[in-house]
Length: 254
Image (cartoon, rainbow, N blue to C red; front, top):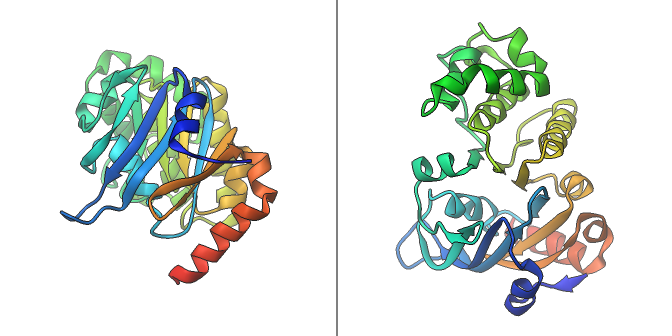
């Protein structure tokens, strides 16, 4: 287990598929949620981000995906800078994003939601639908059903499926298990592992820290807008420093 310094981060990252270096970002002018946050994800990795409420976990994903302005620092994809590129520029380059809420078009059917996923490349629909339906058979079974009538866990599958329709190399998941029953949470974590097993690099923010660390290759613990600790998920779970930081800070923010 190592403290994640900027120097150590650069040395470890090498030619990572996705990198965020010294990111400073926030929603209100003059107020930063991220204060020099670092993250990297190698090809095929499943990377988890945990931390207390207000640590900047979701803000980091949104900054990477161009939904929150980066004030300083850089985001790179395959060595090319994509800092502050917008979603419509990132999706064709292979970056997918599944937000925590409002992640489906409720008045559209499952089929229509997935069609929206390949809006820029409609000729790819059948090929990508077959791929997504193999991962999530429910989407094929319920393709004519309106997404708004599905359960929370089923809507999460639709959202993941739509993000996969453009064949992303990196998938950003923002708290995919939030608000779901324990059974549906299990299914979300299983689905995330399945997606990763197809070769898609996954970066996920999760409130269920233990389950996230159980399935991820590497984890980051964010605290006060910085990457405080990083290491293999299995090592972070039982590291007393991480437990103290995570639970201690969480307790202070309540």
